[in-house]
Image (tube, rainbow, N blue to C red; front, side, top):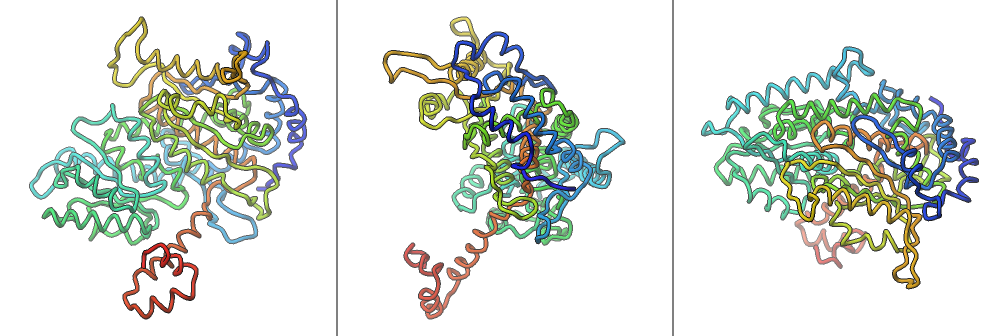
Length: 536
């Protein structure tokens, strides 16, 4: 596949010219009834309302040209079909396929990547058998009691996505089932979680593709020690999700092992066994399959070439407009749903680890801006925290609002003629209007400039299928943007240097001989830093 640099695409010049005079949202014709009706897209149970973005038809046409010139849908199809997309031409790299979509391409007999989808089906079958054995008590603790809790031990993609999805779908748990997560190597994290569960009725799910992740292995040993201290046999409690043939693919040490494959990156792995084992335990097998079904629907819909009818592609192109042509360096993802309390944290990794790159897929330095800083918290809490800056600060922050018309639990109350859910959605809509239109006032402190872009992603209710769709929309948006910027969105070399230096520091801390420590302290920056930090 031939790659084109972003700045060489003809539509870039057109968009640069249009950016000199973008649509004024705060003007007399900035946000009209007609505009609200026109600038919307609907697919897969979501309405995407983008009248609050600083675009008009000429900009959208040019963004369409940009998407076509970059071959974004063609690259997406190539990715789904098993092309090696995780690579830097001419340089050592992982050289892997990118097939997280194959994990949910299981609902028809015609698959894009047959081998990967078959492997996903095999793991799903193993999971179904395992969950049935847990349900019936065939897999139980030493006293024959059924397990009620699963603790997932993993970090990065082995934690953030599964944790965010679990928290989002807690109302759909199997009665009597719960999950906890241990990620941080901070021992207080483990101590708090382990101290709050009945270990005798808890399964420990250790997740690491390589089987060598330092933080995860350290926490696994801590958990195994806690089990032994409680008089429990770890062989009856600890299972693994890992790469086939890794040190954790060991039936002598694990109750069961499920496989994750090199072609699924950690931050895209929530719909693989990385998320499947814990989510299946908590939601039931069919609940996890519903997540896959929702994600697969979006994977198919994202093949639409018209950006006005392809929500992930439209989100991606609007993001590029804001980042590269209007010059906005950050994006706030503000979910008006407490259930999505950790979704922004998942997106931070998924987006910033993917598109936080400064080298093209041919190894040259990029000459354009790539991934923005992603951040966010749920509304309405955020309104009483950082929205002041969003409305009146000197930094303009594009906002992606996410909301649902109906609450999950169905427990609500009417006060002053409206329910709490209506108040929640009304606040979201009001904030989007206020950021776009602003307000004049003779008192400058009460003046709102407006013209601050935002969009709204709205669905009826957050359930497993909806969550799968939402997950896939953002995964695909991120991939589309990486393709457009001509960067490799699927490696994470920037994470590695810190790991190497940490190993050097730990090696020095582990030295027992005081003479060796004294000699080393005077020779390296790392050892000197340890000394002045009071760690040796």
